[in-house]
Length: 221
Image (tube, rainbow, N blue to C red; front, side, top):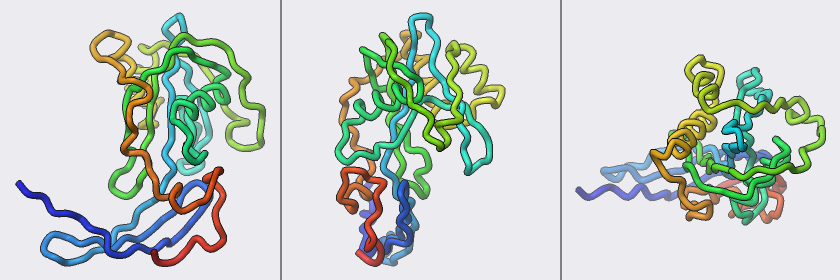
């Protein structure tokens, strides 16, 4: 069966903020009509299931203003350095949020968090053979109020079913890690191609810090 090619014939940047942007695309629909689709642009992110020698994983509890609650999550962060290798970003976030380094890395999954309207894709890694690293110092942002705990995979799964873990990235990572560590699946190489990594913000902002917004970044393109 032949599929329609959804071609973008126009695009307008509606809002450009440090960690995301919003654009409106005009897209050719089947039959030749065009329709508008709003897209939240994102830099992409990484998350880490870090497993220590006791089989416990690092989890962080962090305030999320969009839901007004502290959520249990995996160590994670934005790919906000232009061209940064995802494993490098994951190493940084694991050290900053959990005070941990890792010698062994594998890829658990690439997760498209909200494909109906958002570009965000998160690469979730499995980190093993852990050591210590210098943890992030208090910055005055949400990270300054972050808790870190080590829990077993069984406990983490129970937290999901109790409703204590609701972050979709954490849920996917915990279940994927459970399958790999039980021998029922294999992690992919950590450097596998990341075809779904968002590129819109990186293409528009000169970098290297992708959170820096240009003063003239608005209008049609």
